[in-house]
Length: 546
Image (tube, rainbow, N blue to C red; front, side, top):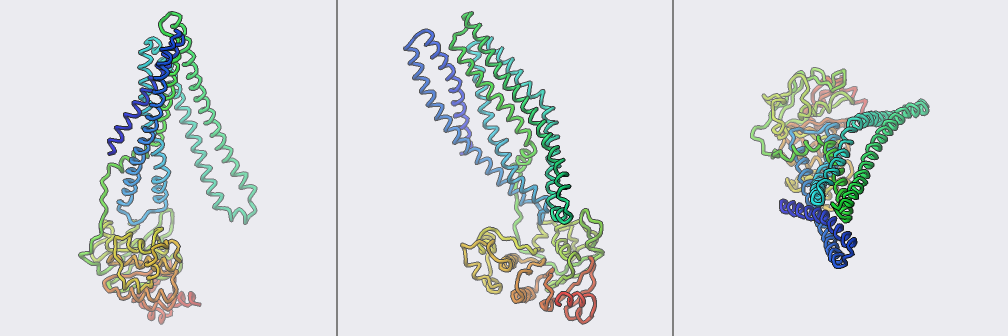
């Protein structure tokens, strides 16, 4: 079907452009019939002209409709294949810069691909046909006249190439100041509170003015050079038409061509200049998005294989951290320092501590979000970094404190749009009957606590060995949190790790409480043991509940 659409589109634009060129010949014959005062010839070609105009309108309409179909089909392939390639990558999560890059790729860059490549190549095909057909028609009128026109057209083409280096350098300077201006805009807005605190508004505005002036000056220079290039190109276009009249007039006096041939040639010259400009502009636009084109073309060729979940054959019985240290990029001090701890199947663990002690970092390292740690993280006898990412995902689920839900019903969110069934007993346990039964209400309208219940319910779809809840119950009330913890405590074939800021009596439900301080393990044991020790955890706990 798509090949048929493309073939039909080519036939339509071929017919449209050939008829457009032939229309110039009709004008020539009408003009000559007036010169020779031949009314029969005049009215005959007038009728032919009316038929040609009607046909041009029909062919143009059909070509636009077919072009829209072709563009939509190509863009659908590009968008879906590129989106699919992103989700076929073997990674658990996207970093902020990766998210921004991929979001821009699927939105702004995809729009550029459509306008500067997909649509542009179709219009360039039409322009090429029109330019070639117009040249052949002038050749049939007078070969000498065509040679003169081609020389002038070549001169017109040379101008943009001569100016190209200057324009590129001016554009690079403008883009550089543009990036500086964007960076300073963000920097000064982020420092809004500091500026207001120290009454430094005047100085900041003056400082900002330097970047605005520099940016505007580079933009002015670029605009002037572009304006000069466009003006020179337009001037050459006028010169070509003028020279056509002069050369044609001389040929009329020499009885080489007719007056009608001059009118036809002028129209054909216009038919050459416009598509030639379109071709040059199109090449420039395509080059400007060459990286985007290459990236999308690579996606279109890629074979996508999504990893499907399969029940685990070998379960993880123990999780061990051995002398694990970790430091984030651009930070000097370790978040985790020589940390060792053990987790056993069938037990539920709470990791607690002040903010910035590395609690969430532990969860993300165990889940495989970052492999740049020293020491070892062992799943039974296998070091985490030796396990394939797709295999690791079968074993470990990481649920963070910001519950993600799709803009769809709670049922769709829990089942991933029908992929997984929901156990009715779990729905009752989490008291989610009212949410699941409401197909019309979007999950994004739920409260924070309701969303977290939904996410917990969703986490039970697959039979993970290790489930890490990173403050995932923070928005629940104490009763809902206790019910949840009691449910998790009965999951005897799993290792359950809860990273929590909720410091209350619910800690007594955990088999082990791990207290961290400054990236190190300070105390570990059940709640009562740690409390009775009157150590660091005792002080931390009393401080939190007081």
